[in-house]
Image 1 (cartoon, rainbow, N blue to C red):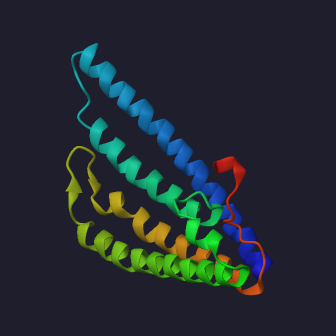
Image 2: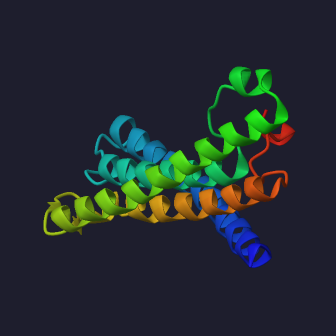
Length: 169
């Protein structure tokens, strides 16, 4: 079961990181076009700022969810490093549980925000406002799934997927 969850989580995390990278590139291109339009063409596109903001919400939440699994989220290791191995494991387990509960909360209340704002329209884009907030419940459920994997690994005494990795330092 854990191997299947790890495969799914690894694929989801990789997809989130790629989606975040693409979102950042597209947002940069949109802002570039807006600046070019404003200063060169003297006609700035009205949709550019709102679309860039929506994209930013999407890629930030996707990267945050991937950060839970990949271990590149912000944390302070001073207390954890000062503890004995059993204390480190317990602290890590508690931290993963808190992240999992936070993911569930993000799923529930983010979903409520999406539902409540779906009927509102972003004027310059013609899209429901809920589209901007859709990554909240999506990333919340993924954070919870990633936390479950980490909790199981910690419970078994295995090295977590989120162990500090040199590639993110």
